Length: 237
Length: 210
Image (cartoon, rainbow over all chains, first blue to last red; front, top):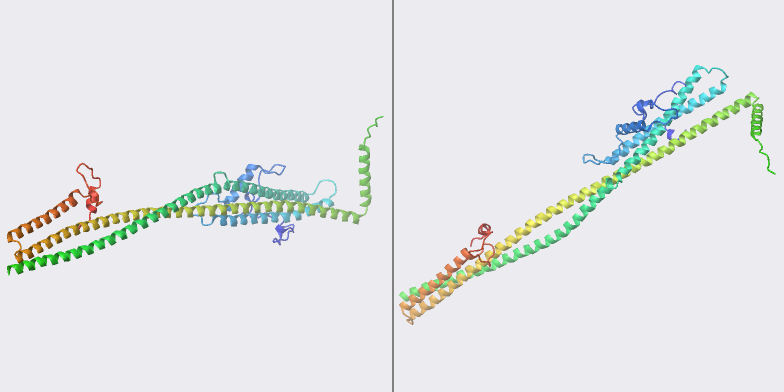
């Protein structure tokens, strides 16, 4: 078995070879495949796009190109969901791959034992089933191609000229320039505030000095007034 | 002489017939035929299986790579957005600090003006007290002269009255100048009658009491 089928230990028999992969995990429409596939086997692009878009939405594996504040870690969530989706596709491909290998071997073996003439019904049924399973395998491959294509489109949205990362980096540059200007202004403002604070300290000291002088002169005036009073009293006595 | 065109169609048909005949002769035996058929089926199955596996593995690897690229771009975008938001927050804080620094600068400047005004007011009061002290000293000297009989009572009274009047006049002049002409904000600035005083209300409210 190839690497992508290493974990599938299922035994395919004539009873279960025509089973379908669980629709809930299938990447094909309704789990059965596209309804209108031409003889070339190439699924119409519009149908592929509609199915892959629906599938990504259902698996919550759409690339988070627009980041919203309520999302905690959108990249990690996307990575997990995308890995789950890829794993489901791998399991589905393996599911049909094993059945296709089984029924193809059975069909070829039956074909070698056939004689000419009308083919038996069971052979025709096996042939139809083989073609159906092969068609599913091819559709899964086309779904993978569509997935790759849509991922490339999403990746381009991240690196648009005026969108995504480039726009954010432009915004970041603008904010950084403002920060540099603000830092300069803050330094100047701090210097001015320091000078003003020093001026306040200086004027407080001058006030204290003047207050001392006032106290001294107040005292001297009281002494002078007392002296006059003393002389006045002594002259009258 | 030009060679005539030789038609190879017959030779090809003959070779195919010989080959088929050889194969038919080879497969005449049932065991050999069954073995040949089994081998052919096995080869076909292997070839188909390899083709299917190869195509899927190739596309699956491409899809994984594309998903990883998108994841990396999403992380890069998210981190760049975080960085931008952080820078914006820091810038907002810086602007707030600038505003606070502006307010503080204004407050400190105004406090320095108030202190300066208060200091010069104290110096003005000190000037008045010095005048008062000089007057009292002179009166004391005159009182001493009067007690020794050097000057008469009348002269003493006159001189004392004149000194007291001089002191009061000085006090009144200083008081009037400070309260009428002096600017309420800047001590060394005078207000004039024709001058429009825009900050009269502010100066009056900001003027400290003695």
